[in-house]
Length: 337
Image (cartoon, rainbow, N blue to C red; front, top):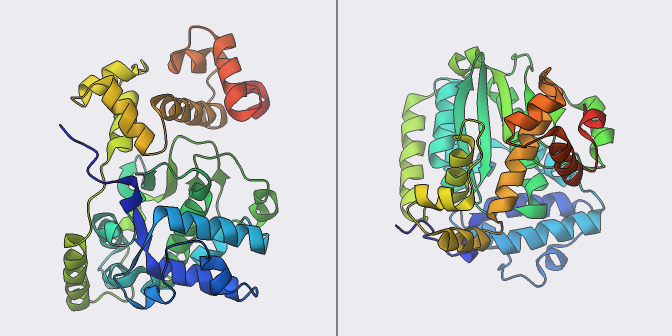
């Protein structure tokens, strides 16, 4: 069974997002020529709505933009600058949907037309709806800009589609809290948590049924048809990272080893390790990321004792868990709480 069907170099984002990033940076006096130097990106390629930029080149441009602007929070501004048209036909399909739930379902279905670096999921958790963004390729330093720009974009699009909607919910990110976020936290409209198990936007589930002010069934069908045509020309990336995470979390508190997970995926452990390496990660990194995220959520959102959390995460005693937690976060569990 072959899972990895794409070469890592084939993972990409729409060049329209690149154009928006370059525009944001040009207002700071940073030229396109400087930003694109050393990449394989053809200047002006973004004028073609179907143009794509590889993950490697996009990461180079983002890293250079942060370095030259001195603004590591660039993702938040990039998302705020996005308009409906920034998301191509997917944006128009979502805008003209009947309800917020339908718009989000279309975003999940057709997001591959915008990027193959991440995957969107929408589901409910009790009285909350959850929009989850999962990496299909380990993003590393690109993750904050990618996640923050998307969630920022979703927030501002929601305000345009439902202008009278009260802002209620929370954001969760898998990476540690960036140093720059301290200056942003006071102006954030919802609670924001870091070091979590997943990247998620959470909001009241009843909002999925809210009717959108630009609903237009005819336009929605036309835009969705265009998305279908675009999907046909874009390779579907493997969901290997998501599959590995689901198997690990499906153990009911017992965290399986790489051999067991590989067996579930009908491959050898050597093959699984190689495929994860191609995606820029390892089994241990995936396992540690999930354990760290669950530990943080238990510490900040439950009354579980450190001993109970250690047991829930498969550690033989609290001291072993505390050592691992300090390695992940540079803080003890009690300090984090």
